[in-house]
Length: 382
Image (cartoon, rainbow, N blue to C red):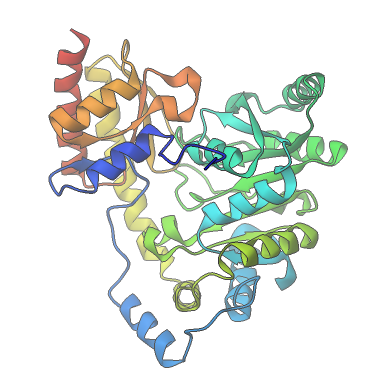
């Protein structure tokens, strides 16, 4: 029987995570999960949902009351003024990105992503039938985007989407407002969609997070957010997006024909999390931990004469270990030193000597993980 793609993980980080999750003695620095856990009172939200009988399908766009709470959150915290019909709730932010790629570029359209970029963008694009072009994130100027569009056209393709992920995964890069304005102008002039992935909106180290759609509205922007990172709740699988109604409606159709709707109980819990404003205490605690751990990592990198792209936000450190093949290095590191990391090759062909580690674990885990990485690097490199 013919399949359209091989039924196996196509990313090293997935292979590594699959192995790491089978054992309890692995230091797991490969995945985007914060060390903290949601408050105990969240248990009550699940019970409340069950007692209210929220055990059935919700609307294709998501629960009305949750979308109303999201609408207020977007206005108050992101400066995005939207109607409820401009909002969709999905099973995690990843699903929202998948639906956007599918309905806008799933017929072979091209998508610009950052270099390096979260491996999910390229993986989702392959899955839905889109194609990607990489552009260095510090060069998202109007002229650079125009050059990329012209090259795509020369190859017989059509540019449909420009992805902006900030703070970015893996480098923690944050776009300045002038660059955002240039990308918006380019999108409007060429009738191209911006997908603004703001999963790490709460973890900016200096200054305040600015949402692209707060600048001139969202006529050419779909902004994607998630409950996972803010509330240390990756298992809840609730994300949401805001954008032009036509695209949001198309995403809802894709959602119906994929899994009908996100879990009703989980949507209720997400609503209660937003209503209770639990994020404030969690975010402050996590930001403090992230900054402390980043200082530890920078000191260690300097002592070992490695290289780091200093993040402006997010929950990762992207580190270069000269001379390594990141795929081979990471697989052997897991087996021989029991440390799981994300190989740089998963983030783009130019990053074979790089590793991504999370800085969202305990200080002790970070220190021990780095010690083992350094020890193995000396053996591997010599």
